Each structure stands twice: as structure tokens, then as C-alpha cells.
Image 1 (tube, one colour):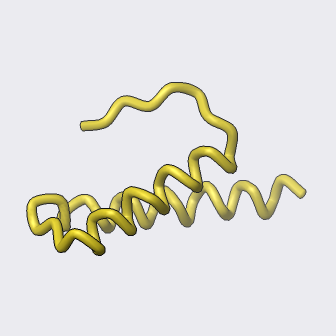
Image 2: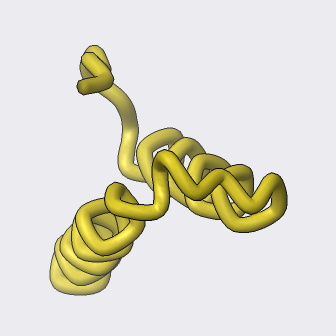
Length: 53
């Protein structure tokens, strides 16, 4: 489990996207199970960002 401090929305989006891309690019089978959660977190953050405007 990764612990993350307070981030701006942009920082959170960047970190999650980077982690997703890293798992896929490196064919990281051990962390494939984290992809659905990361994608859901990204969708949630982007939805919050959209409604914030």
C-alpha cells in the first residue's frame, strides 16, 4: 500500500497516470491487480476536477 500526502489535483493525476503507465510499460504482472483501483481513482479525481469548474 502506498501512502500519499496532500497533493493538488494536478499532482495526483500526474502521479496516478505515471503509475498506470509504469505498470503497463514494464509489464509488471505483480501490480496488474492495482490497475482497476488506480483507474477508478483517476476517474474519480477527474470527475471532481470537472465539477469544480
